[in-house]
Image 1 (tube, rainbow, N blue to C red):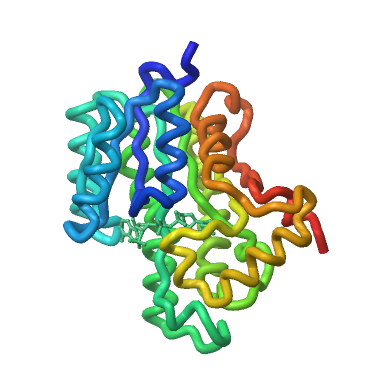
Image 2 (cartoon, helix red, strand yellow):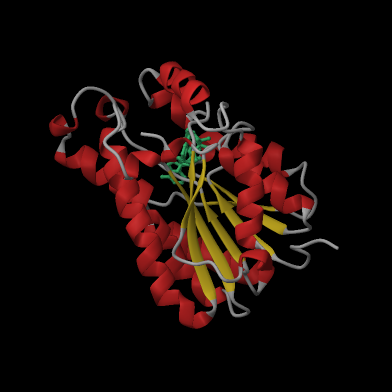
Length: 254
Ligand code: 0WD
């Protein structure tokens, strides 16, 4: 039977059909989850609605994570529509393109703050408002990258923001464990999405993974989707505060 039947899950970060969040949605829907999608602004609303329309019983709500009032409104709408929430998938990041090339040492104060606000603090800002809806226990997960652990070319301020995000996973896991809420991350290998367009020399990064990853191939969004499904399901009930690498083993090589 379906692993996520009668589970209500919030998914933030679908921008288009190549988004990692969209592959996650497919894997969760296949196990019977009821999904709520959010969109950042009217610029992407239609695209998100069109995609969400292909998943029965799904909900579409606005939320720009840089605005507290919008997160309050989101939490209110989720309470009204779902009553109880079981999962929250965070798949959001942003940094200015000029901060994703050249030297990290040149990062500006406001570029640093913006990248951390959207890419790291948003996990806590949303969790703070939705964990009270997880009255039957829950699972929260976010998306991270190897650039949190290693200094990688061009990833720069995003790597520092991902390090803050991964530390946030541990602190949130420690806080929310008492409510039977688990918090984890997936560290995905590089995937060609809209967000990846901002990273300079992305092609050469993909080529390196194909040559050097133990499994000799690049990561597919469906591989991330299936791990996300595992993290949202009771199969992962003993796992919290963890970052799972879904990268065909690339992180183990020197
Ligand atoms: O190689 C990759 N693509 C990897 C991505 C490897 C490892 C991790 N990740 C992470 C990203 O850093 C991000 O956290 O996965 C997550 C999802 O990224 P994605 O699927 O690669 O990229 P994309 O399809 O662009 O989705 C990110 C979305 C935004 O899209 P755009 O391109 O419109 O910025 O994050 C959302 C938005 O939908 N987003 C926001 N949502 C609400 N409020 C905001 C905001 N202020 N800013 C961005």
